[in-house]
Length: 459
View 1 (cartoon, rainbow, N blue to C red):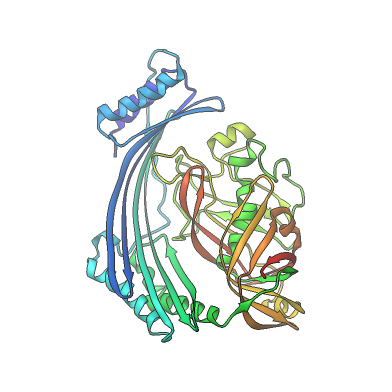
View 2 (spheres, rainbow, N blue to C red; view 1 turned 120 degrees about the vertical axis):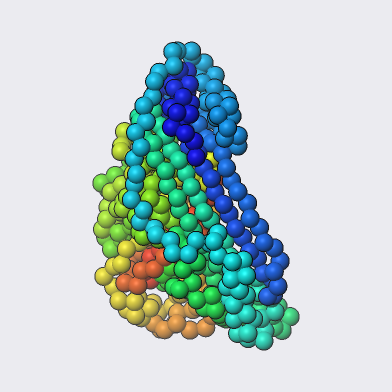
């Protein structure tokens, strides 16, 4: 990390160009990745990301520059590039930094970097072996272990100087099943903001078995017939629907420039009264949690929608200036090469008043989406399209035969109103969210919900 003297000097250089706010972001991140294919090590990768990003504000205009040269000369050259882009030449003001230490709510018991490589490889082998042994029709298993040790330092012209260290661990297993001339796949992913003690919570073998079970289930599935119907979406990664279809539309990245379907709707009812949605970066050891955001602000539990009423957006510093609203601790970036912007952390629909069994029983004919996959969304219109990785037909209030090839198609504003039953088994699933400031870890979640009507793509 950089010395206090160097940080103060760099900030002064930027301010001398006419900026009304300056910020230095320093990063040191160690990434580890182990991949196995059919029980054999395919690759072991370790890389380090180290560098500095410097940003200046003039009103709602920003200048950003980054460098991998963290020497005194390299940092000051980067600061001078920002000053030159501002095209003013004032005297260099004196910046005085005062260190602030934020509490760590994500303790780590087993730091991945200190564990033996054999132990980490054995964890992945256990998962892959369990998947391979689940059924003779499992023909290929790919397993991986990702570990991240992320340290940042932030200083700004308001006098803030702070640091944070965050460790994340995630295992993924992908299984392929083959029978009667066709392949089907299944996947399982679990991650937390913790070290290798993750596997005291999620056994590697359970990861492998879940991936294999899904692949075998999809072998016997028939293609679903397209149409508009009620859909029950299961908990965990089912929350990706809200994350993509609605969450991005609540970020200042789009709201602050008038490019969101949710612009100007604070205080308005935008969802069924059973829907309460939250973005909470303070959940201990959650995959998307951090102690501070990438502008040095503590994260918060932000109630976005309460009983159907829009209560808050997710706002970074630039969004705060544009919108005239306070920052919410949602500024994030993939690494120092990206300028930060407003992003989600752990975003979920809270538990509701309905019993899960009543949700299924209420559907005469529809789709039960047990496991969701990826998709796409347009934040301006809210239009989305998501794949269903594992789905079943509901007949006469009971979950029946498995189906494949299903997708959910609609708009965020419509689905919020059409969620008419919300269960009580809220869980989160882990993913990586891509946006203008790169790819960041996020949790998505919800209990079992019912959407009264939605277009289901199929055959």
